[in-house]
Image (tube, rainbow, N blue to C red; front, side, top):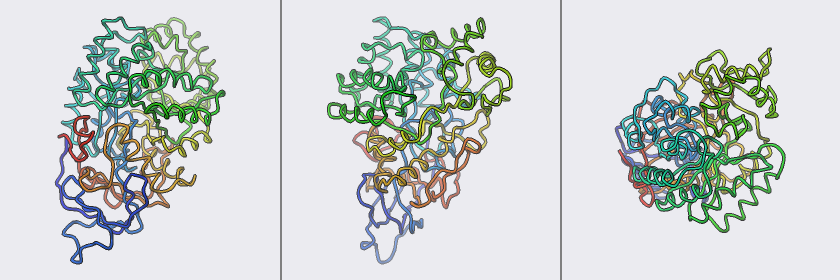
Length: 530
């Protein structure tokens, strides 16, 4: 996967935030090949200088490359290997296969799987032919990229391969087959399994199925990530218990994805305190991003009893009884100005529109759009409050994640949520403005999420040379819905595996990224897979 020419490089003149949350250290960071050779305190600098390429970091923070534990670059990283949307905010490693979605296994029905994972299929012209996780991994390994990637198996994809797209309970023999699929995926290098309990077919999982999944993940020392079945404030604690109890029973490491609270009910502070209590008895943490707009499929706005029938059945209903589906959309309670069309594969004219832009009945128009696009419509929905965002940003066990995708400046197939380009700098700024210490803010973007997925992210001798250099006072996002494809302010340099992919705020053409697997990461900090 990697294509690079390594030199000896020294990052000099800055303060090192090593990723652990410790105090900043005035030191130079010496890189040799793909690995950090030494961290040299100023007073121990060699009198004759370094025989190395010098990267000036005066008045800057030298941090580990950021780890995005929750993103959807499963396919887009292959389409946009330069990965400008991630390099331009300091991310050097992405963990894909989230929300129960991954582009494998397909069970021989790739078209059906594409329907199930439509929200992560942001590059509709990308042709992929693999049928299993090993084939997906080989496709990633054969694509030179600017960043590293670690795979998770999407439970929804595994379920689809066994039992199709309907969200129903699995028979015993189907559950056995799916368990074998999970073992195979972990043996093929996946660092974990993700659940999408709000999406068909994963939302059909029983407690017994969730327990079996958690046991399988724990056996491989992986991470179990979960898109909860419900993020409404009135149901959030119940949704957490749905998966926390099986994970505790199995001894699995549980990661709650994009933790947030929607609507009225249990206060978000009380939810955080509830999870704090759970943490006394099990390994559980979460991640979050700094926006009040979420991004999901249009199908997700429909009632769960309809979604559970699968995309094909929903489309059939929308065609036969469009007024009924329009009523369901209307009854969600969302206002027309809170919904933005982000992707509409067969209707590019609709992309970027808010429902408030529609003169005719907006809910009827939305139903027709769903039918026209075969269900392949994504929307951004305003569904949170800023006070909750800031609570998450101040919580030590909540890592930063983007929930975005690898994109290039030329991406036109959909409107990018600004999180794809700016989640990490925006999070850093909100943390710092809330009084979070520099070292702790860096930890929440590096070692914190890395540890959850078994990925090392530390400025330390012998570790992989993934490095981001930022200016503390200025590091922030410039990405907006109107202009998402914008690099961070206050980001000077980014290095992946010993090669600079951003130098003096300008991208390079280097593609040193690699596939990180469970076998080459946990307990083995500097080995990488080519």
